[in-house]
Length: 331
Image (cartoon, rainbow, N blue to C red):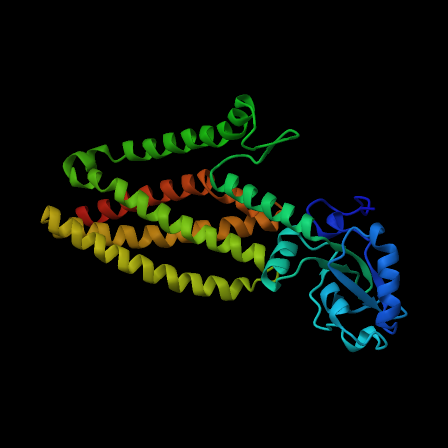
């Protein structure tokens, strides 16, 4: 029987079951095997035998395979049990549960309380379902699709009406962001008309900053999902170093191509400084957006796709045009 949903959704507690084989670690293999055969139909999960002490504290596990192939049935379970336990708490996110199972090659994950008492396990079939759900959710969010509209999940079998409702909001936001970007460009029409080469490099600037930002956001969301105790300061320090290197290399290469194709040193300088600053700005936006959303208990993946792209694009255009104006007006 599955544990009643007394824990928040998308946590280990909400996905665990408690009708599992639990035995005292001091019992012999013979006793355990006989009771296991007798009660097998009642168990939801039979991947592992969970061993506890007198206080119901989880002390080890024994796989069914090791139990069956051990010929000496007179020894106690604690003599062959695995003490290197991988466990989660009831409030652990389901993303973390999936990561722990996959990274350690486990078929189920035990759930324990603060004192180490065994509460239940998240079984193998549930872990697979959670994995599929999380992958779909992240893919939809990266694409700017609301994963859930009302009570209907977005899937390959969703109706056309549902798909429109799930995708349209981000596209509307994108139109608003694009209009703001167009208004920004309009403020520099005189500058662009006097130096038309600037306009031709706008797609390059926008694409490069978006690409760098998308890479950054994918990495930090994955890191946050896999490591609930992520060292933010260490991560940000590394990301700043990486962003600076990427911005410098990309800026130099783009500036070189701009100079070669247009034979204009000023244009090359504009491209270098603008792209350098734009990539750093885009990386910063796409790094801090998921962190801020997580702080306010929102899914970090919601910062991906259209939302972060809008802010990144507007920032990139502002930097590009500001740098161009500053260098072209300098003596």
